[in-house]
Length: 197
Image (cartoon, rainbow, N blue to C red; front, side, top):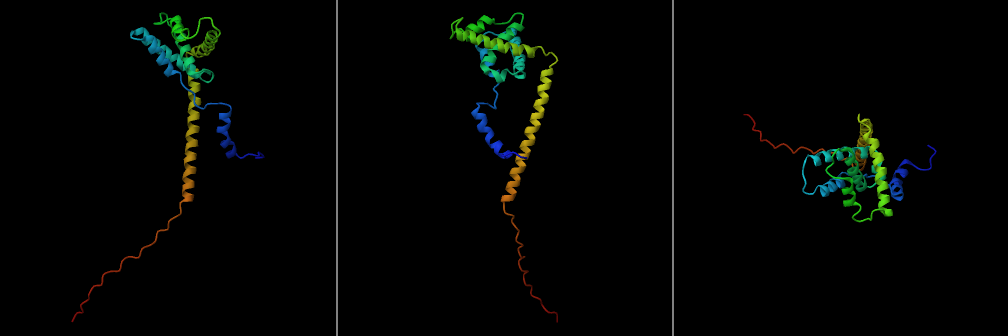
């Protein structure tokens, strides 16, 4: 319309702009660090308590993905908060909150230090986000997020189809149209005609 910039100019500048504000398009999932933490805590122990604990942790991870946690905190902090949150949800957890904190926080930081207190405050903030997700027994948040994801998927697919169509059109325009030369058929062999007498 009356804009000084064309759409293609804005799209070209988008990546530079996102890099400038340190915005990441990839959001990492806390599942991998969570599995690592559970493995460290579990050690050689096995039992139904650990299986149930793992299932609860997986549910809580889903709450974190449906909330803004993944955008506000690193995956390792979310994973630790999930471990602590899952302890609260079980009657008899296979591991205590103190064990988790001692193993992953207080080994390197002194209890009561400023850094340790800041990390504990972060865990409280994450727990509030997780609590919001856990109060959704009918999975309304999940269904709403799933609808949005489907719409986004459709848009991405449409954009990909459009991009492929444009590339194909450019190729067609660039390639010279080859006119097939009509080859003249080879001459027929001469047949000797014998005259009838």
